[in-house]
Length: 154
Image: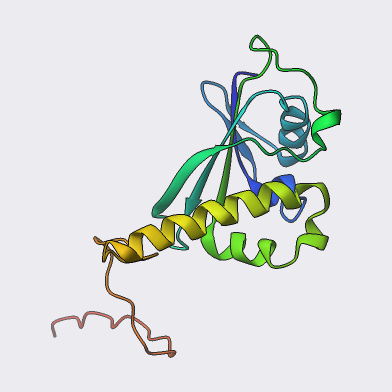
């Protein structure tokens, strides 16, 4: 494979969301895990999003879910691209419990460090940290409200 886009939680076995192979379409979670396991020498990118889906941060990580000594030698003909996708909330949850993520813990810690660094830079620049400028401002209310239904003319 040349490229796969998959949620990090799927690779951890926490859910069964399908992955996407650009140019091919969707593949089920188990197949995605097998494909990613064969792409340890490729370029691993990440996309961290807010819970509302807005992209917050992208980058490249050198971490893999195996010790460096066990990683196959770099082979540009077979590497490909793995794009890991995760929400900031879920990333923080996973980073707080490294023992639960096993071999993935160093990779998750790397993503969490990148996210923390990006938030620090954004707060120094006076920009919202995790709230995109085009989104509605956050509310302080904890109540859920139902949208009102339009009334029918009589």
